Image (cartoon, rainbow, N blue to C red; front, top):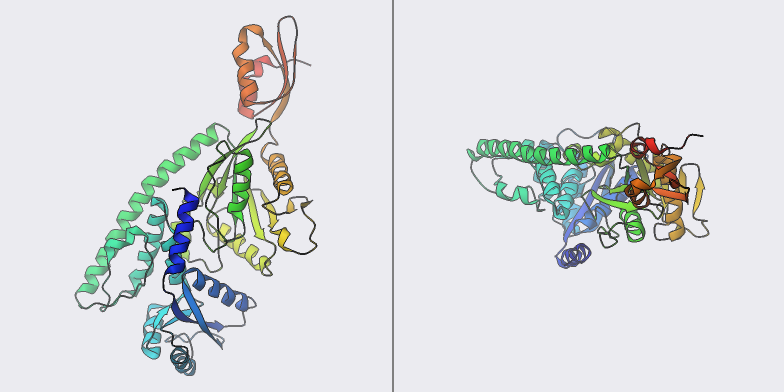
Length: 438
């Protein structure tokens, strides 16, 4: 079964699972992006197979230290849960352990904050060993300060990356310290295992750098169209057109960084990386855990920020992308901004370009061609176009140039082959002995 088929099968299975009825709750502290965050929270809940049946908002300058919401609002939340027959409250912010406990006591319902919700989604979508390790570490770190004497942690399931509630009930006062030590030990083991994998990945990146293979990384908000762009280029220019990545119109459809080689018709090539998407208030623990996955972006020669131009909140999404890139230490990497999904905007002209800003549709070949041209301008700027004279006795050099370089012109004289070629810096140094003097 292919990756695409597996993804479709998983989506169908998820759709068939019974959904949990939840109420969304948020604290409006005069944040201009509050409405957008609440809309995004609803989308995250839907992505986690939850049915949103209600929404409760309170305007408050600062959270209540004990219950996050004011006492009167906690009573209102309890009434809303009963009225809508819901058994879980999903909050827009991360709550402290005591706030979760007090809200559970005050509402008689399960409480899931935004961080736990995102972790659940990541856990259910993680497929590779690396992604499962990263999510497991983030989950355990989230759990650690929230341990209670009533919790019965099933630590054996953590490395599997499976979703599920963090609040399964159990008993035993003495089990609290045992669970705490066990979790700390698990975190240490998982971090060691992840570090070993990261070392192997770093070795591969170092080899690519030595070979002067340029790396272009797609970054941006989740569901902006990064995987669609990658698949469009892979199908047309990939060294293996069948090696597409999973794509779907859903949040966090893919959590893994996929790297594919793009071989252009003129023999120039580069590596294209599709990275995990961002979302506002992405948990710090998750950002830290996924630092290795996002290392492709940090080491890239060029970043392509993909923006869903059809979304009315695209500017807020761009701000989130910039903040997340800064948090993972990605700086001083040239960036091209791609306003994608222009086909969904009535009367929008595309493809269009203003410097390093493009308006396009990922499914449009003319848009793909424009993007490739802009990529080439950036990553091949230090390539050298020169004329070589290769003696007939070195015929294997001509064969290599025809296979691996861009040959613009080819001619012969009495002693050898004359080629006008574009070379990488490494190739230029290697074949310098054949360069014709002007």
